[in-house]
Image 1: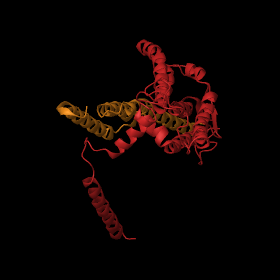
Image 2 (image 1 turned 90 degrees about the horizontal axis):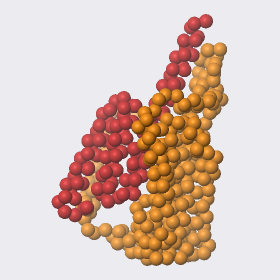
Image 3 (image 1 turned 180 degrees about the vertical axis):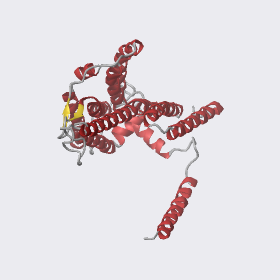
Image 4 (image 1 turned 45 degrees about the horizontal axis):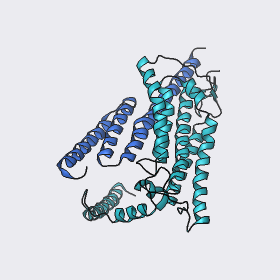
Length: 97
Length: 258
């Protein structure tokens, strides 16, 4: 796929998509939303790897970058929310009695 | 050091860095060019050992010791995460009930994709020496496939079908197997991680000597590592809570709610 006009166009398009996706990840301010955008960015990145003839890298990118890392981020955000709520509850319980 | 002096040092450093990078980039071969000295050497060595997948050959045959280092890094990182995320004093583990509603379409998709993903992962590991993929790729696909059960909304099912003890042992066993294969290379062959098993016919299912064995060892470690990693995070989020009257962190709020 590296030879020919079509190959070059494919590489240019996938690189542009990766660039746009990376910018979208950086400029998403809310962490939970950012995890989802990061997941979509992972798909774009794996498309680029396929275009650049690295299907094995694309496979690990899909599994790690699109599934595992966003899941870890989402779970961490949820845990932080839970800790915050428990703190508030503890602070509220102090004032009431 | 004063602010202007610090900025001066930073500027000098950045200037030297930029100059070196410019020099390095000027010397790079063009994108997608046709001269690849390393490719020529590596592909020749790959065919010399009857391995169809050049990437696997480079990873496990030509530079097995580096890959052993990478695998150990992964192992240590996951051990560190598991140690950090374990329940500590002032935290307790609670029973997790399956709550919330899962869309039927999601459930159906999970039922269809779960067996497919497991088979795909086994295929990727088993054919690691022949087709693109290998132990690492198969391992991560297998572990994400197992966690589809959680996406299907059933933490209890994931909990039951994922005996964590097995994965704890599997992770260590994979590293030990990898090291043992490397030492076998030194014992029966010329050097550490030498390819000592008969290599068979190029592109056969059983070919490439030690490469499929390394793939299995890495697959075990990687799959177990990711499962343990995600189980630590899932436990923290779903099962581990601060003790009633306990504290979530060091500080004066201790005993506030008692």
